[in-house]
Length: 321
Image (cartoon, rainbow, N blue to C red):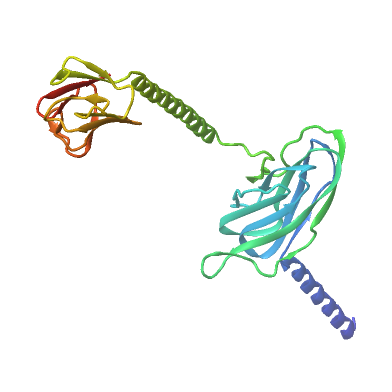
């Protein structure tokens, strides 16, 4: 063989080796599916694949889907040591995350993602985002740089005919639940119980307040329905009873008073009895006025049934109702 020919063959061989090495070491992630035709009720399985020359300690992915056609079930990763990290799910977007405590080599399937077909439709799945995770120099998780995303979309044809139920998937490994949120948010039972207790307490409190109000009103009505009486026990007009049907009622020596007491120790307008919302009161108008032996000097004091009222030196009354 001529030297030139050998030289050309050597160059071609080297280029081929370099190209193959580059193809194998390119950091990339892509979506694939063994089949794209399904019946209603069957399990739809798509595969998230990756190739990386750098060992990874985790990966993430987001797959967009039509919630009217598909319902996410779970993802299964066959990569040794990878554990699923459950995340809150949004209807229409699968959000998956896996992590490992030790670096793992990947060259093939990262995870198989499973959906259930809900009805006949033409739909598809789109790889919105994906990343490979490594541990950086500071010891924190960080995305591996330079990763490209290859095939992103898969078109699916779901027949409206009912298919047989299938198993969750064809590979085994760490399972990550991907339950989509319910369209109707359920209220936790403890909240319902607490609201029920608060409702019962509120009703009982309302009944108590109403009963108390009616009872107080009845007591007031009962109090005011009985006309109070002054029973003269000693002094002028002893033995007489004066019904206090008209209030205020003044007491004194002057005949213009409702109760006139001709006593030298009683001044012309000695005292006055009046009513307020909460009871009856005796007011001193400048004479000597006592209730149960306590002086009421130019002021007023509340009258209660059985109170003994003294005006001047000897006029003595008992207040009653």
